[in-house]
Image (cartoon, rainbow, N blue to C red):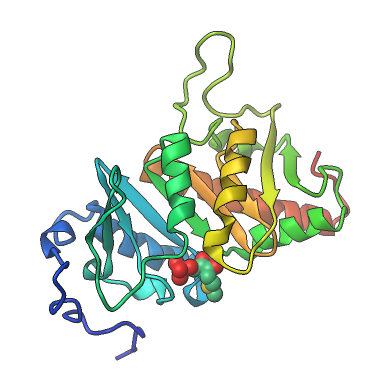
Length: 255
Ligand SMILES: CSCCC(=O)C(=O)COP(=O)(O)O
Ligand SMILES: [Zn+2]
């Protein structure tokens, strides 16, 4: 039996604020089940290694949040926090944990983009592209990752939460096209995850077309209108970041 480093499953039962009805469901797509299943898969991608990274899902007025500092691939539905989106009060708060330090960053994607899912990875590919940009080794600049004419960028929607339709008043919506340039802003890391909030919010405001924010020497935050869009955009970006690193090693330019 492998130890998860998490307390036993009944560790929350002596708390006054442990409404299990909020997290127990037979539905595999219930956010409390879905977060656990996805983190197990993300661990296999190297996205949530060594307790880093995570995911939050908003369903209606409820925001589901994982505990901080635990092995994300071994979490159980009863480990989840549930926050009221409007009041920001915890409706369920397992007393043996703290909520993820990423919570204010996830909330930024929900409030500023209308996202319902936000994924944070510590993928080495994301970290490496921020280092290549920092060193000024590509033409995209230090504070933005840019790449064009790679088929996979068609998997990225403008703003992160758009539909795949092109629409409205001359402003382009929907997904990027093959001849568009993908641009992802890079913010500087801070000593504590939650201190990224202000610069991440600023980047979201200044880059209305982005579906993600890279954090230098740390990882990436990616969001979507639902779990499917957040997950597929995260997969597309991770593919693109890995490709970009390999292109760089071959002496190829991204733009
Ligand atoms: C080695 S993980 C350092 C913290 C971090 O960057 C992170 O994403 C995890 O935060 P959490 O509070 O969700 O464990
Ligand atoms: Zn992190």
